[in-house]
Length: 462
Length: 97
Image (cartoon, rainbow over all chains, first blue to last red; front, side, top):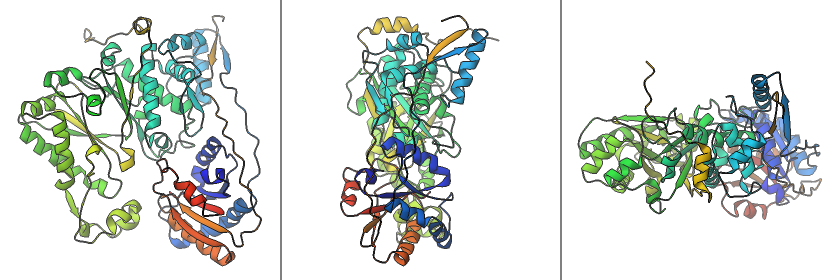
């Protein structure tokens, strides 16, 4: 798209299954009538003879795009901020009709939404001192701007409260700063935001950092992440199979994965918070976000000594590195459970020392002989062809990054001795972006208006 | 607002008008410098091989050059696209996948 904007006539390739996404991206970039040449999906796996035939079939459209351009299509005009009245027999009927209408428009995630009425939006906007017209981020693939008001509307729809809004705004700013943030919302991979919150705000608004922190049960964890995802849907314009091309998707695209670091444990152990490790001041409220591939690996280690625990960690993580050899070698994010963290701290290890130890040990632990890689991998894993398959047979290859900053450690969770390992592929996809969370001047009133309900252990229902 | 109706707001944000003029086109490709650019997506370079062959057969007077972007999915490094654009008259871009 950028070539056309630089006055270079352009013919862009896409496959028929990705055409809608390319059209959306073209419109967002300001060149809605970009010249396209479209071949049948997929391109990968085809022989040169098949690719030659496909190129011949569309060659005239390449020439036409370069010499004549594409006729302008009339564009449908939207009415931003449009008010929509929904009537029904009673409240339940209105609510049902509202949800059906929003789902039909693809404004949502499939779960019932809270109606974004003017009254609820004004209530939500108490969570920030910024102007409703301020732009937080330009989104993809639609190119539309997520204003503070649009963020508030989606936060209402997600079921959030005003006190969550500062975190949602900061998270969206951080997402925009991630190299692969907006790219990940349309990718074929199962990617969604992984979000970690540090600072006193976690307790003030009750973001779970303990048992089941990455799971269900806490309004803050669920709706902060859901608001972000709804912004992707409604402002960004992601539609599964149309502009969001995730092959199988993942359930974390409904609420993201939102957690707080367990700072009670970190304080007890004298370990740094993640935000402090990356340069924020102690006590600052910070949100860190990264587009993460869905799924983690369970690290179930039962030992009481730091040396044994580290040896087991290297063993488990090291063996799991093999798959990355043939794809993108990216970051490793260890979410350490408090019991494992305590064992390491009691053995005299700081959080930073553990991180550096893993960063130095893992790339060298499991090194696979290139000569043993099957010849078929050259075509099956085209990305690795350039980095691995052309190496001499006696080379040893690793699935772990040699870049120390690719290794992160967070302490999250409740009792038990199971940690988690999250990974992502590409080296450029693994950088968390972090932003300070800015609270409104009347923060105490916002907390009152939000009626934060701390989730305590209830009386068991059986 | 009556008890059996609600007024809600459209949640889609604000349109950003970035519309740019389309590049001026020449009806002939003879003598034109055509850049064949691969964005690094799988098999895109192979499809460009096929396109290059056909260009050589049908437009022998076109001057072809091949380019490879640093990566497919991340924001391109500052100036990467601009430096290619300075050296070509038209571009055929493949995504692959």
